[in-house]
Image (tube, rainbow, N blue to C red):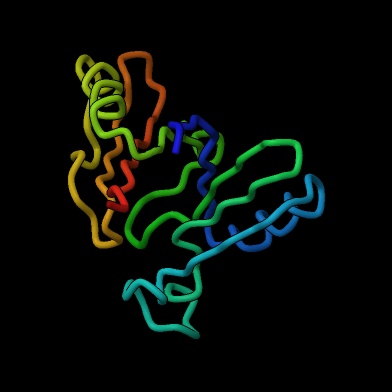
Length: 139
């Protein structure tokens, strides 16, 4: 899989509605996972039913990702986006991470996460938030 760059939007409890709206507007395939499915809250509760990760892939080749802010993380309208870099080329993506985080700040260290991928969040020296996700190889 080639690396990809796309926007990642953050919501305050209404990610499901927003991502369904973007699907109506742009078309395509929408996949969503809740915090409850990942052990991050009881299904049927607001925390458990909030979206941990959503991805919309459109026929035009657009990819839009989004999620509800995790419990305990502040959500600030106007600052509710990140740029996501993802793929399975470990060396390439770690190189991007090193350069982006080098003169910036790290919010989540680039390390293995509960869903099995290597993931990190940083803000570059210009104040732009980035997410890097390295998918573990299939072989």
